[in-house]
Every structure is written in structure tokens, then in C-alpha cells.
Image 1: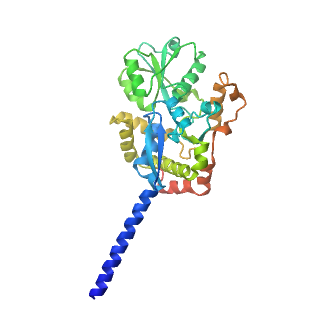
Image 2: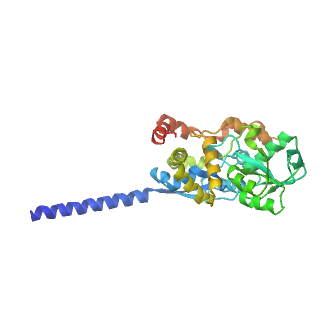
Image 3: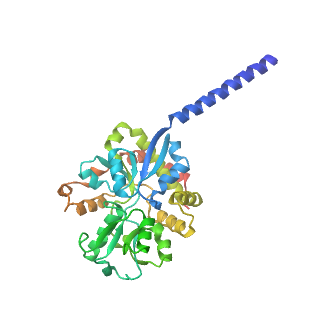
Length: 336
């Protein structure tokens, strides 16, 4: 009996060692990748949730979220290859300029943003000649400003002064200090702007202009050399979306952490905007990409002959469809 006990002890020890080695090997097999995002708005929520809830790890990735201040900086960073994954939609301009960027997912087909102004401005027509704040040139806020200018019959380059000012919080502060007169902000900023007495002039979705907003982008070179990494990242990204819809409490906790706020109104507004406008199957909008091409054509003649299909790679989402991944997500995260 003593010998049997000794054998059992040795077996248990060996099993423990094997488990330890397996866990260590699994940890070592996690591939590290950086995933950039250009704003602190709720549109980045699926990345934050996938990171904090372990969905990226589930698919073999150790993802490091990287905040890059504004769309222009984010595009430049993606074009340079670091980070190799980016949460952004505006790949068209950079691609036309020679950078091989590609959109592999899209969670926004209307810019979910609102134009606010200082109290002295109560009508859209009064924006003529004013200083209008955007996060940066080439960013979603820039294209939203162009949409509004077209709606008003303004020349977006001459009839007002576009002022790039970084994230929403910085531009709200700039407006409060009188450095800008108006600006376009994401939905998360609505409660703060209203408390400050700023005037809501228009919500950009009310213009009914479909556009490719926030999405998931990379380079074709990175896809070629790291296809499985990209596919795993897409899986985590998609599961993050489904999780947000299914578990509000957990989502709000993560939103608050990355948005750097515990403001209940801001978080609730952000969550409701997310679930009311986000696609669970994040396919890019070709119509929205064509809108961007049309806007860029006067400055970039090559945009006239370009096709929206040049700027997307739908193969990852199509593979997930064939593999039943979306059906699996729908069962795991039932609608509430």
C-alpha cells in the first residue's frame, strides 16, 4: 500500500507538472499585438471590453490598447505599421496617397455626433465665419464638418475656420475658454455640453448621409504575414460587440475606465448610443466609402476612378459567417 501511495504521489506530481507546463506554454503562445484607437469615445468600446473581459486572450492574443490623439495621428501610425491594428474608418485618403491600408470591419455607418455652439450661436446659419472645432484633419469630425458645410451651402475651406483641437474634452474646454465658437462632438459629450449651457444645433445622423465611420483597419502587408493574428483579433472584436449588448453592467464599468469618467449620465448616454447604432455584424459600408471618395476627389484626382471595394477586405467576416461564428455569438449573448 505504501508503494501504491508513493506511485500515486509521483503520478500526482507528474500531472501537476504537466498542467503547469501546459499553462506556461499557453501563456507563452499568446501573441502580443498593439491595437490603436484615436478617441476616448464609446465607439472604441468593443476593443476595451475584448481586452478587459479576456476575449482577445481567448483567441490567443495579448492585446495592448494604445490611445492615439486624433484620427490623423492614428492613420500615420497605422501606415508606419505600429500599431498594426487600428480602430478607425478613414483609410481612403491614406490609401489614395500610397499607403496600403485596408478596412476589415466597420461599426458605424452614420457619424454619431452632435454639433454644439457657444450660447451666442443659436442657429446653424450663424456658424458662417466662426471657428469650428474638429479633432484633426482627416478625422471623422473633419468629415462631419464637411457634411454640415455641404448641408448649409458653405465652402468648408472658406466660410468658417476649421480648428483642430484633439479629443472632445480638450475642445469642450477650448469652447468654454472662447478659443472656438462651435464644434462636432460624439454622443458621450452631450450631457457635459448641456450642463455647460452650450447650444445643441444639430445631430449629424439627422443629415442622413451614410458614411464609413469607425471600424477596424490594418495593412495588407500585416494580413499577408499575420493572417491568423488578424482573424483572432476580429473574433475578439466581434465578441466584444456582442458582450456589450448582452451585459450592460460590465460594459459600463469598462467604458468608465477607458473613457476616464464615472459620470453616470455620460456613461448611460454612451451605452444607449452604442447599442442603438452599432452593427453586431461589423461589415463596412461601401456606400459610405463612396461618400468619402466623392469628398476627396477635388483634392485627390485619383479618387475619381477608385472603387470602394479597393479599401476593404471582407474575407475575415465572410469566413466567420461560414464557420457559424456569428450564430455562436448570438446564442452565447442572447438579445435582451
